Length: 216
Ligand code: DX5
Ligand code: ZN
Image (cartoon, rainbow, N blue to C red; front, top):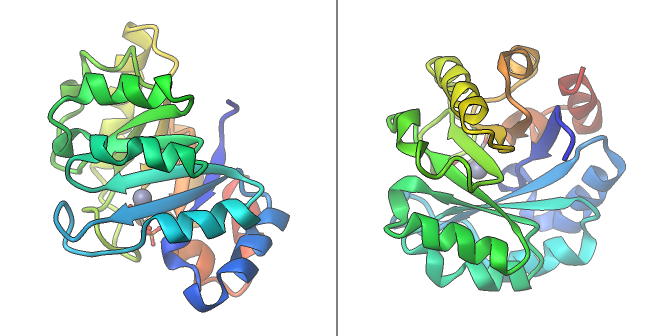
């Protein structure tokens, strides 16, 4: 996987024009497509599930990055992979048997990511870092698009980078929440490999241009 990747979040797309928005992303310089699944239990919001995943797979030409904000993610990872997820990320805080579930995702042929909430320290990942393909650091509290970026994330990127290096891990670092044109370059500079962007892309007058500018 190459670095400096942009993963626009479908959560901020126009659901009345999902195909149009996915086709726009296909034409853009975005690398991945971020699919936020929320269950109303792990997070105080409900988004979408398998039917939307079907539409994504039907039209998207991008690498599909599924972010599960659900309790008991182990019950659903296989189906998301069958529906075409290229990467499935699960929350450290939501998964009792994290190691088993990370292995399950990889055994089923997808990349596996672990997600940390803003209040969860990076050191929690010490015994899983060598096994994961990606660490997703939440830079807002999960559940909603359009929130303000939490500055403490920069410190966590540095700590994650150290943890990756000291364990010979190949994990990518992904940042999700409040990413925009003002902080994208700084986040890449700090060590992020993949930036998720919802509101910044879809509320922009020119989403394709915004994606292009985020990669500079
Ligand atoms: C929040 C989601 C994010 C969200 C990001 O719980 O995980 O992926 O869509 O949205 P923005 O970029 O608007 O903060
Ligand atoms: Zn997300």
